[in-house]
Image (tube, rainbow, N blue to C red; front, side, top):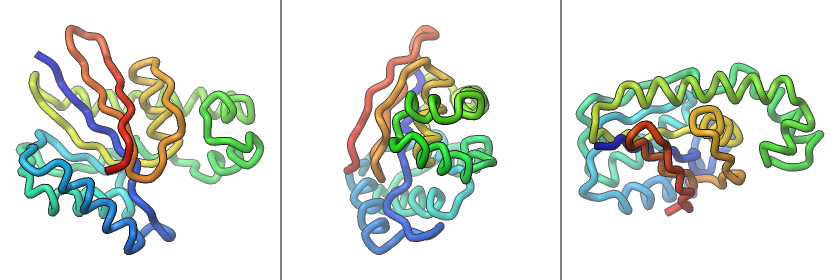
Length: 176
């Protein structure tokens, strides 16, 4: 038996709220999941992530056995430092961000990976979670949990993480 986490970046936003295009993209993502049910849906607590999750669920018509939760550990406590690292690196690639601020990025990889691990720990065998977060913190969480480096995620894009027999397989997925 396995567990599955579908980790997505929130859709297009202006500040902390989705734009009209962001709402439309989240609804399209939900329509691509009609008939799927999740054990758990998780947001970082940011409005743009929670709003994306709500629109996905509304369009998918899905049930969520264990509810919709907030895992604040999936959101960095220092988003400005990520932005500063991005400005210095000129890229959202984790390796470039690590070069720009190695101690910070390495610590965040551990913290964010542990938070994603807490989501995994909540899932029973055969369970599925939808997690809506941010970039580059989603990529850092995946690296921290699985050791897999993802390319920077565009809005709505993400990765499917499957743990079977203790091993993680990570498959990038585009926006719907």
